[in-house]
Length: 171
Image 1 (cartoon, rainbow, N blue to C red):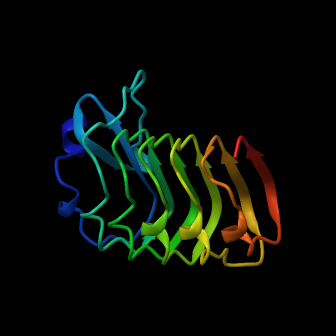
Image 2: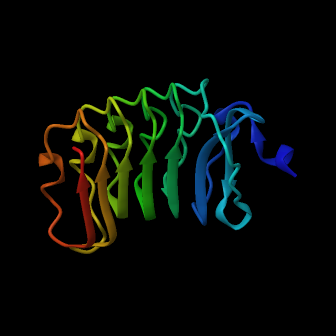
Image 3: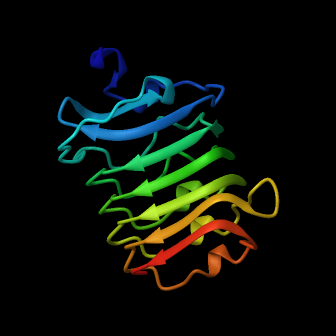
């Protein structure tokens, strides 16, 4: 079953309709990364992290996602490849990417409902988030910023007026 979801190159992913959730998660059996739709998602326990993926080129055609989760990519330095992404109708989750310095690849995102940015040790700023907007004047879910110790300013999130749940810890 796992082999049908195994990708060796993100460039094989074409423009989709964004229905469901795209997860980018590493595992020992997926040397670059595994992408799968929410309806068929699964977790692999004890995951040591992806040590090959440095950017997200190959997802260049992605414009819309239900949820987008980018987790546990040890060498991911850039979100380059997501420049065409305009809408995340659910949660944007960027977690435990220890080489990630910025969110710049997401600078064109203009609609997001919930944001979780956690455990990115050298993430320097949130400038890539300056243009993000919820489709209404509130985030209907979570704004969670936790354990990003190099981030010194939340100013790029000055557009946030209301959230259902706000968490800011170790920033």
